Image (cartoon, rainbow, N blue to C red; front, side, top):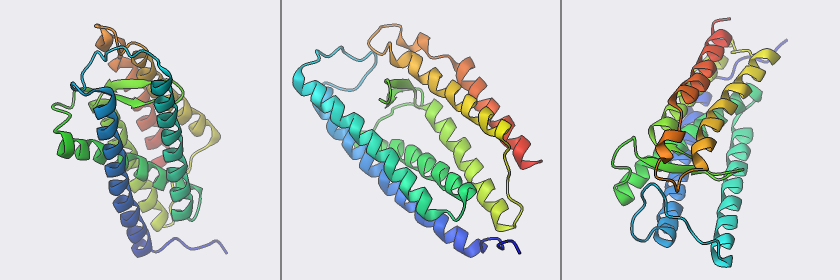
Length: 222
């Protein structure tokens, strides 16, 4: 006999706990960024970013920040492994944590710094393996998409009709994610240049995001 579907009540409770954790995690991330902006941008955070001389102290802080981001990924992966009963659920919880954390990171920054002023304001998104940059709207769209995917996967698991992906689907998802990452990494190399905004390609970004949505719909309705 196969294992029966996880009771909806248990799934909802787990999901709510994960969401609450992610909101708190978003605050921690925002608080760190408040401190970093006070150190690196005492006159205000704006693009194009001023070029810094890579002194020993600045290099050390940048390495610490890269380590913190790596530790953040470890925390997210560890939490989703503990929360899920199978690989589908664990991936759904990973998407939930990442999405809610990212959305509330900007919510908390708005509360703490009254920033961003607009969803089209630019931000440094990540530093591994190179700086990622882009308008705030872009990562928010990715997070909303991931959150919808996660809820649908968990709902289907509750009724024992899981969303199944083939190897071809997973290769497609990885390719779509890579396209989105590249769309952030290209402008990340030009954040100190006056024409920094011209390096972000909405066409490339939307192509990657749309491909992910189409692939998920293919798996969902299969």
